Length: 185
Picture: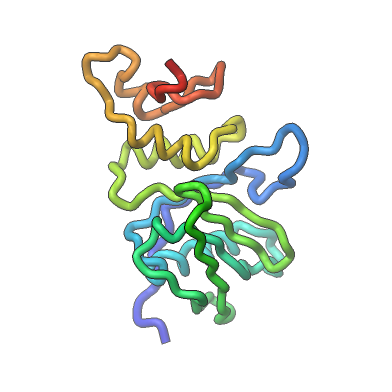
């Protein structure tokens, strides 16, 4: 029996996520998630329930498998027990050393997948919110590592390109590149 409820995940999803991941409109991310810690047992159950709730109303799309990057988490369990409002299920966890930094892939039982930027827990509120919004933006074509790199670029208060709004939005709508990211200069 679970002693306390799972925390509500800080999650932002594109309106159409999970979407058809083929064709010219395909984006690398379906949204972003900002966990409160690097403890997968504490953080993942709430995310699983939120992603399942985001699915169709018939509820027949449970999350069956999650793929994660080993370096992003403190422990690496192979299975996760998730107690939902209507059932208890076990989710398989796979850990990898070389996938993209900050990427989490959840796979539904019907085979659909959802790719999320995972913002590191110690990230500041403004930067995390900006990254979540950008990851979920329908026009975003940046990968998880590119978004994380934008979080790591320190703001220079003497550089006019790094105004408060530019640092928070981290997005240049015309070119779809990171403001302040070395590749954008």
